[in-house]
Length: 176
Image (cartoon, rainbow, N blue to C red; front, side, top):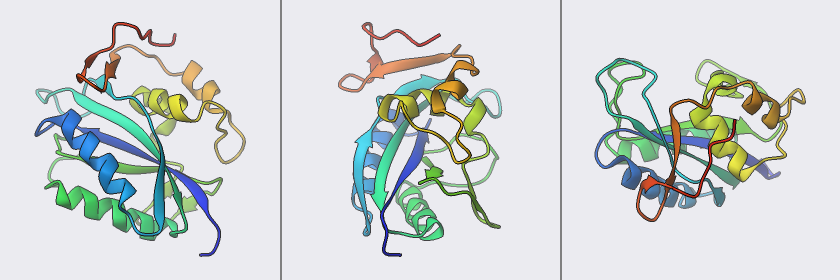
């Protein structure tokens, strides 16, 4: 591939010092050959989507400028997950690190391994809020403005964190 696109990656962790896992994953993303980290969102705390009894998640979104094809980028993301001892046992279960390719330029991708835009994007506040922090003017493939999705997604249970302390940021107000 010779052209460059901006790809957005969702990051999440709820095991093994989750905020630190996400921070280290930002460095891992910046080390992908054929890609360059161009933006990172604040961290957010949210309740888990999956099985009950697991810890809250720490989530964020990163923007990568890349020349990699979508599946090659997915391979690089999964390699980073493996370096963080990601184990895939329970769907939506606890994990040290989850990296999801949310958007790949303005492309729609539908293969056996990959669906972009990420199918859960429209209803996941823990993705929409950090994505809006770094790309407020973004439009999804097909033209839907990101802010429209954000307005339709309840913000209950998501809390923006102060990255320096990994605690709730008293100066931030969650958008309504």
